[in-house]
Image (cartoon, rainbow, N blue to C red):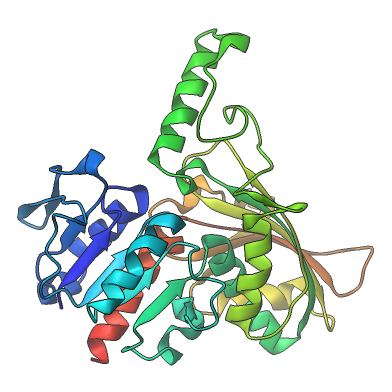
Length: 335
């Protein structure tokens, strides 16, 4: 199977290359075609015992390519995916470009990946917030039912890209170095992100942001049932690790210890929940892991059937690159 990776030099693109390089698929795949913008053209990226030169879409040859992965902004995916599909190349898209298109299956591999045929021409991978929350909700929906979800979604700067991470670093260094109020004005966020929280992820559509609207849309698609969701999405001054503080109203009553056992026995979930020993997950602690971590599971003393918890995962690996690798493995084994 020959693969092309669009956005190869971005945070997610590089993580895909790292995972692919260390997987059994590396022996089955030919050297991937790496595609990025003109800024990165000519850069060389290690892959196995060789280096691969990054090309632009116009200069890259897609001859023989069977699968194209888009780790690109939505506007780039929208621009190039139709042309790639016209060449009879299967597409795995990590952007939000087609997540609202009912004609394009939305995939969270551990939940519905194996029911989405391997020969599907075009699949859209859900957002990291949806992936981690749906992974936790699915077993609860099946066991007891979920009436309502309330979540505060905390996005790291790496979600916005490498330049956003650089902006956080520069602003933090400037403030720690005594820059004070004269800190440089950023370009990646509407407000200073260092030592701050920015309550905007994506553009505004009415009162809600793209991330907040997207969570509701995507959860309903992945879970295949309407679940009311109230959410607030914020950027926090961290580099890696997506987290959510979640309140769930269940359709029945389920004790916290039963929830812990249910989630611990569910595929893709790691429960770390021993507050007496200060054992719980953090965004930083999820770096370079592939699962969804759940902590602080507790019942609401004021409302029967209401649970609260904290969930986190590596947004680049578990929330993006691993989804691609799992999809490729499924396609390879069911070709």
